[in-house]
Structures are given as structure tokens and as C-alpha cells.
Length: 50
Image 1 (cartoon, rainbow, N blue to C red):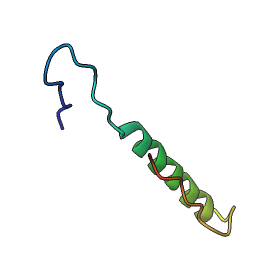
Image 2: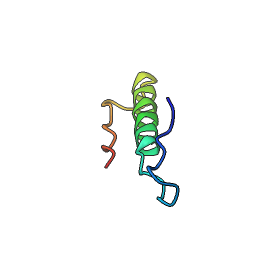
Image 3: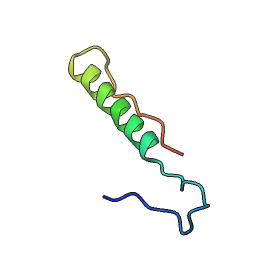
Image 4: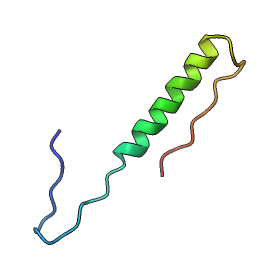
């Protein structure tokens, strides 16, 4: 998917929450892996991206 470009060349970058979404997904996967390995009894919920 192409990155969105500003409407004029003097505008700053538009904020995109890709990094927060990726970090949250990685934390969720790590929590599931710890649960599957038997290290924890519950799957920890990752905090939502702002």
C-alpha cells in the first residue's frame, strides 16, 4: 500500500499509527507464546494503540 503524500510540498508528514499497531501485535503474540509454553495461566491483554 502506498504511503499518503501531503497535499502540498511544504506540509509535514501525516501521522500514521503503523508503529503502535505493530508493537501491540508483537506484544499480543509474545503473550500468547508465553501462555502456550505454560509460563503463565492467563493471556495478558496488550494496551490499545492511541
